[in-house]
Length: 368
Image (cartoon, rainbow, N blue to C red; front, side, top):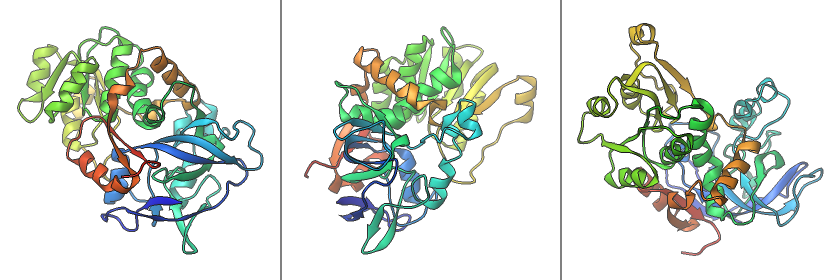
C-alpha cells in the first residue's frame, strides 16, 4: 500500500509503498477514504512534539472495514467507521471514572509508536515503521484496534466523519463538556482553524451570547461569522483586550484558546471577567510555558483548565455529533476546506501553516 512517511523531523513527507500486516487480535483493517489535516500532525512533522521515527502520520480519519482480526465482535467487513486517536482500555482509573480521553493506554501507543500492544503493523524493506497515536491514516489502509473505531451512520460523508473524529469533537466538546451550561454567557474563541470553528458551532448549540472569534486571517473570521459568531476581532489590526471590553464590558465568562501560543493564552486570561475560565485546547511545543499573573488568579478568581479531545466520551459523543449533523443542527459541510490526493499531502500542510480556510482533507483513494 502507499502511505506518507515522515523519516526525520522538519523534512517533507515521502509518499511511498509500505508493507502492512494483517490485523491481529481485536484489530481491524480499514481502507482510508478521508483523513483530516490537523495542526497536531504539523507539530509532529516540525518536531515540536516527538514520536518514534520513521512514522506514518495522520490521526483524524474515516473509512471502510476491509478485514477483521481474531476476537473482533463489534465490527464486520463493509462497516463504515470513524477513527479515534484515543481508544479506551476500559479498565484504567481514568476510563472507570468517565474520563476516557485520558486513558492510560495512550501512553503505550505514544511511547512505542505501536498499537495498544506496543507493536507495529507497518514495515518498509523489512524495517519497523511506527504508527502515530495508534492510527496512521495518511495512507491507503491502516490497521487499528477495534477500540479505536466508531460506526458511521448512513448519510454522513467520509470527510465529515473524518473531521468529526478530532477537530469537531475537540472544539464542540470544549464547549459542551469542558464548559457546559453557558446560555447567555460570553465565549471568546481564539483561533478560527478547524477546532476553533468547531467551538463556534458548539457555542451556538449551547446558546452562548455573545460569541467572539479572534484570528488574524480575514477569510477565517468571515467563516466564523457564517457559522454563528456574533462578533470577530482581527488581532493583526486591533487591540484584542480593548475590543473584547467594548463587546462585553467587564470581560467574558469563558475563553477557548485553540492555537497553542503563549502570547494568545496570556491575552485570553486578560479578557476574562472576574471568576471567568480559560479553556486551553491548542497544543504547543513540548516544554513551552506561558505567564499567568498570580494576583489575577487570586484576587479575580480566574481559572485555567485544559481540555483534551473535547473532554469527551467518544463512544457516546461521536454518535451524538453524527445525529446532530444529520438533523441539520451541525453544518459540518461548511468546515471542509480543500481536498488533496495523497501525493499532494505536503501541499496540504503548506496551506495549513499559511492560514487556509476550513479543514483540509486528504483523500488517499483519489489520484492527482
